Every structure is written in structure tokens, then in C-alpha cells.
Length: 537
Image (cartoon, rainbow, N blue to C red; front, side, top):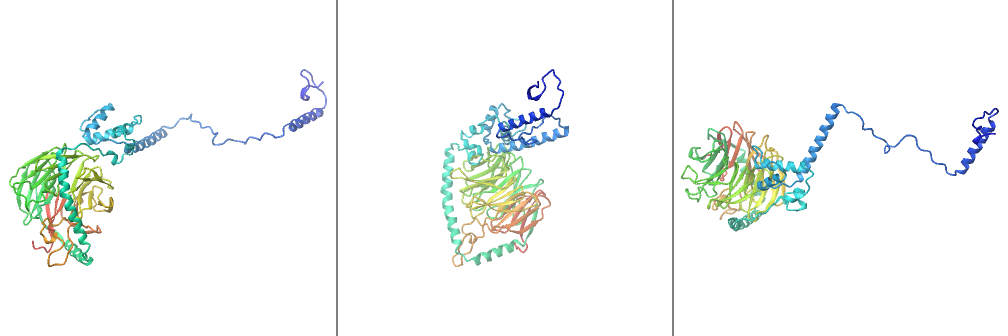
């Protein structure tokens, strides 16, 4: 008897033909196929990428491990820098110390200044991703502070009564000045364009003939700054040795030697009325030094009549407010300060730059002040309100020079990236970039024009004569560590003249108000006066 499925029963041997067995097997398979109407689809051979199993159990070579680790380090560095740009860090050194103490970090490292300390805190906050909301806390709980924008970093603190009074006095001074300037500019639009072209051609033709008029050794150390007196009769120079000297422009002879600084002179400015209406015994000149002191000088003594102390580090550029009562100073402590020279007191300490503040300049109306820092950022501040009116971002290196145009709405900045940028307060942006030099731009200066109110060159119209345009702000001068002084037109910003004569780096430049001279100082220890070759003066 056959077993199940045509197979012989277990334990028996079947002798005979297998055809019947095969036939029964075929019939059983056909019946099973008929009972299943939809056969299951056959699975594709192979596998898909989704089902592909990755075998991570392998050993990398040492070189591959190093390359992988280096790649991860670079990725982490870029991520850390990206986070650092969004971290809001206070500019007040006291708050920086408090935050470091909260993070159980050393409050101060060896030879670390406040700028280094702030950078270290930013690095720590960017590196520590576990600390959430740290930047919001420092921004007074404002979640939008994560953006790290300039507006989010603005901190307003209560001012003193002296600051309030100073702001009011500046407003009362500047508003009539601004109205007068706008009126003069409106009147200038009525002058025929041909008159402008003729005046421009005459002045730029004169600039083309400028050459070295005189050269004088000013000190046994390099000279850092120079400044013409408002009446254009004297030139003050400052040296790396801390000496200030006053020279007669006519014959380049030494008139005064002023001793009071123990370190490099960083800034040098005349009082707006010096040698005009200012008393000789009053403040006629100011200087800032590497010793962190701003000295005020008279013309009757070789020692300072007053020393303004407050900066915690080197003082760089300084500038007088057009009013003559206030003085601004830029410092390496990350602040710029406003001083009342009549009272001999500090009126304002302003923070806002993330690094050292190097350059400072006042608008001709007296309502605005511009500062430039080693953070490659420039700022315009409204002295009447205390607000930051404009942030000038565009340079890729330190801003070393800054000056307002006499038109009141344009600012020039010179930088260690070898360029000069022109900024327009009406457009709130940079309108032109000049590839000026082959080395850093050490200083810049607009031609300001005559300070005398009754000078025909300072007025638009003289009785009995046709109206004529003002020459103020017609051109811009720049000095550079490439050893040259260059003069640029202030309308199309083209090079008009390149002056070569210093044997080393040129550190400072100034233009006399009468337009007769350009002065420069350099590392070759000399100051040079440049004038038209055919000049009879």
C-alpha cells in the first residue's frame, strides 16, 4: 500500500514503475494551484539602499583617523564661531567679570585687559552649548537679543546733571549752526554750474603743482601727529617720546616745546579759537598720550595747565567740539569720553565698540560725533540724545582715521585694510570705497576752509561780486604707511596728487585752513610742509 503523497510507507521498499507516482504528484500540484487564485508576487532579487546594512565594524588606518578628527575639529570651529556671532556679551567690564564668576572661570588672566576678557567670555559662551538662555539673561530677558545686532547691545544708563546740561547746551549751539549750513547749501544750488567747474578746475590745478616746500627734523623719535593752528600760522607736532612742539609755519622754526607726557602722543588738536580769539593763557592746545592722560596746554607755559585723567589705557585720537568747551578722546580701554575743559571734568564715558577705540571726529554743527575702532566698525553718535545714529560696517580691518566733511552729512574713514570709505548720513550707508594705498591708511583729513566768519572765502556772497561757491570740503587728504600722502577730490573721489618725500611710514596729515599747506609727519622723525611750487610764501 502506498504512503501519503504517493510515497511508499515507511519501512517498505517499493519495486515497480514510478510513472503513476509522478502523475499523482502533478495532479495534486494542479489542484493546489487552482485553489489559490492570486499567486503571491515573487520578491525581487537583491536589496534596496534602504535595506542595505552598513557594517561599521572596521578599523581605520591611523592617517584616516587623523584626517577624520581634523575634519571634525574644523566643523566644530566653524559652528563655534557661528554661535559666537549670535552671543550677546556685555561691554561693561564689571558685568563681564560677574558673568565669568557665574561660570566658575577665572575673572582675570595674566596680562589680560578688558577686551581680551570680553573675547574670552564670548568664546566660553559659544563653546558651552549646555548653558541655555545665558545671552538672554545678559540682554535683560529679551529673547530677540539672540540676534546679536547692534541695537540689542545698546544699554542706557542714568546720566548726571552735568551730562544733561551739556546735551542741552550742545543742542542750543548745534541747531542754529545746522540751519545756517542748510541755508548756505540751498543758496549754493542757485550758483551756475559753470562757476563750480571753474573753481574746481582752478583748485585742482593748484593741487597738481604741490611739492615739498620744507622739511624739518621734529624730534629724536618718530613723529606721530601734526595739526595746523586755526589761523594756519603754526604747526603742532607730537612724537613717540611724548613731546609736543609748536613750529612757525613761515620758516619752520621751533616756537614752543611742551613737556607733560611720558609716552607716545596719540592725538593732537588745537582749540577752535586758538590764535584767533582765545586768550593765550587759556586752553589753546590738547594732546592725548600713551600714558592714558589728556593734557591741556596754554601758550604761556611749557607744562600742562590741566591733565584730564580717566582712561584706563592709552589715549589715541582726540578732537575739540566746535563749541570749544568740550573735548572728545578715544581710548584703548574700549571707550570714548567727553570732557568739559572749562570745569575740568569728565561728562560722558561712552561704550559701544567691542575693541579699542582709535579715531574720533566731530561734525561741523556740533550735533554728532563719529568714532572708529580696532573692531573695524565706525559709529555715529548724537550728542544731544546719546543715541547711536549710524553703525558703519564695511571695513575688514582697524579704522585708524575718521573725519566729517564740512558739508555735514558725509564721513570719511581710513582703515588698515588700505582703503578709504565714504559714508552718507542721508543714505545711512557707504556710498564709495577708495582703494587708496598699498599699506594701512594712518590718517585722513578734509579741507575745512577758513574759520573766520568775515573771510570772503568762507562766505557765499560778497557785496559787489557775483556769488561764488565755498571751497570747504573740496578735497580730502590721506597718509599711509606706504610712505605717501595722497589728495582726493571730494566729489568723484579720484586721485588728484600723490606726494612722496618721507623715507619711512607716514603717520599723520593735516591741511591748513587757508588751503596753502599740507602738513605730514613720519617715522623718519621729520615733518614736511607741501605747497604749490610757484608759491611765493
